[in-house]
Image (tube, rainbow, N blue to C red):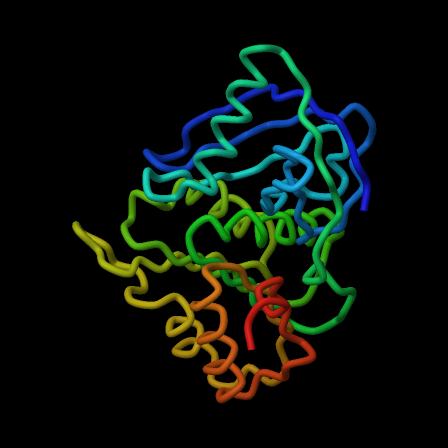
Length: 236
């Protein structure tokens, strides 16, 4: 783990409830694709957020914070960052945390995100593009409504960059004309991929969701040793 001070350079809304935060660390930030950081509000109050940046972006850290009115954990962190930016004060970060980072392999890959879990798999996806990973990579992003796909154009461009990349957005409850996958995001994976045995799987979302996905994926052949999620440290 690396402790850094960072300035808050921008806070930009991505949707009504999701904000992109850009941080400029005082020294190069060292982390692996898929790791997270902790924002230190106080000595005993540290808030964890996935790093959306790829590891080569050592001079800038990007976070996607979902801060709805009911989510005090994230909203308090966002207000802390806003105040630091307004007062031109630095914030303290603990960088390079987690055990669900990218593992070098030659296996095909499933990246799965629910909601703002997108930031976790985005870091891995951008890293794979940068290193020229040549195995099939399937990026599934599940949201409740289509308007929550705030990075849809960006990920379509990511998929178009290499023939072995595919981006599959999944909308749980479409409200207009939606012609893609619907329902739960992991059900879309199971519909598209008959056996998950040869795949490495990286996933992020609500803990209850990840527990369900793990069990369903293993029933469809996925091997636990090739499944990665920080939530595994907190669920049975």
